Image 1 (cartoon, one colour):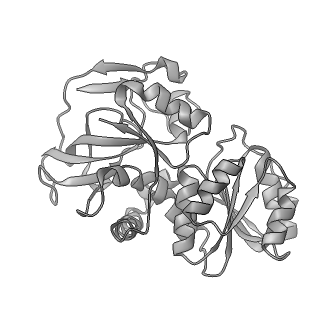
Image 2: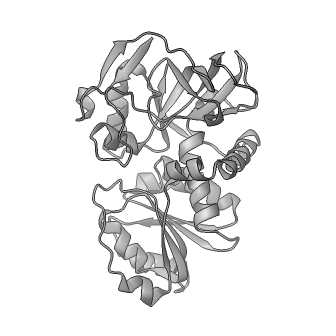
Length: 324
C-alpha cells in the first residue's frame, strides 16, 4: 500500500510517498481501506515536532478519515467487512489502509457521503466538545469565533447556530468573512483592518462576548479576552497564528471570566462514553443535512505537500482532503 511518510521531523517538503506492506489488524482492531483522509492545521505541527502528540518515526500525518472495513481482528464486534465507517487516529491516515481500535470508528448512515464523513470526527468532535462540555454554551448567548473560515471555524459556526447562539465571525479578509456569512454567521468582523474590539463591543450592545472560540492565538487572544462578557468563557483550542499568547491574569479577575482549555485527544481517552454520545449527535445532524463539513479542496495522496501548503498559508476555507 502507499503511505505518505514523515521519517524525520521537519517541513512539508520532507514528506515522501512510499510503498509499505499491508497492515494486519491485531485483537480489538479493524483494518480500514481509506477513501478520504482529512488534514488539519495540527498536522503541520506534528511533522515539525511542535505538537503535544509525539509519534514514533516514521509515521503518516492525517488524523481523521472515511472508508470501508476490510478486515477485523479478534474480539471485534459490531463491524464487518464492507461496512462504511468514519474514524479518527490522531495521525497515520495519509495512507491506503490503516488499523485502528474499533472504538475509534463509527458506522456511516447512507445519507452521509465519504467526503462529508472524512472531516467529521476531529474537527466537529473537538468543536462540539468545546461548546457543549467546556463552554456550556446556552441558547441566546453570543459566540465569537477567531479564524472563522477554517475547518474548526466552520464547525464552530454551524454547531453554534444549532445550539442557539448568535455567531460573530472574525477573520482576516473580506473573502473569508463572505465564506463565514454563507456558513451562517450573524455578524462579521475583519480583525486585520479595523478596531475589532469595538466591533465585538458593538455586536453585543456593549455587554461583551459570552463565549470566545480561539483556535488562532498569537496577537488576537488578548484583545478578544478584553472584549469578553462578565462570566464569559474563552476556549483555548489552538494556535494557528504560531505564537502561544501570554495573558495578563488580572483580566480573568476583572472580567470574572474563565480561560478554558480544550484538549479533545485527552477528552476521548478519559471520557469515551461522552465522546460516543457526541459522535452520535454529529452523525445525526450530518444525516439531516445540518452540517456541511465544507470541502475546500481534494488532493491525491501524491500531492500531499500542496494540500498541506493550503493549511500553512491559511488559505483553506473548510476542509482539505486527500483522496486515496
